Image (tube, rainbow, N blue to C red; front, side):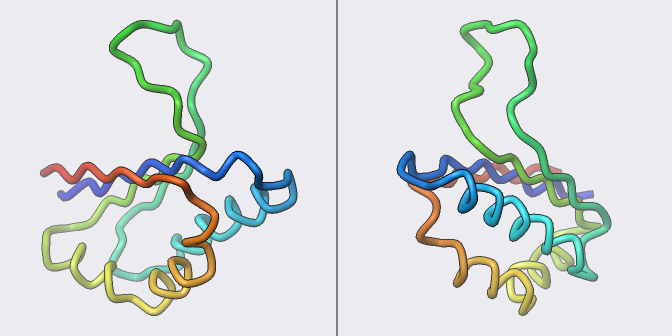
Length: 99
């Protein structure tokens, strides 16, 4: 399995409504057929420690069967529409892929 972990830092000037729109936009990625599982979350209220980065706003974990499925995810029209519609909402995005 391939784990495509994406962390978004949203622009601070976004309104609560825009932040909710962004979250709904991320949720649309669950419709992508090449993704075996899509999980959307926010920083957990776990104990703060120096090794834990909870500075992001939205986390996205996409589980794919393999690298081929992840490549299909990248070019899926739903994914491309999400990027086009919401790329102005984030100040930073960080991705970690692992197998």
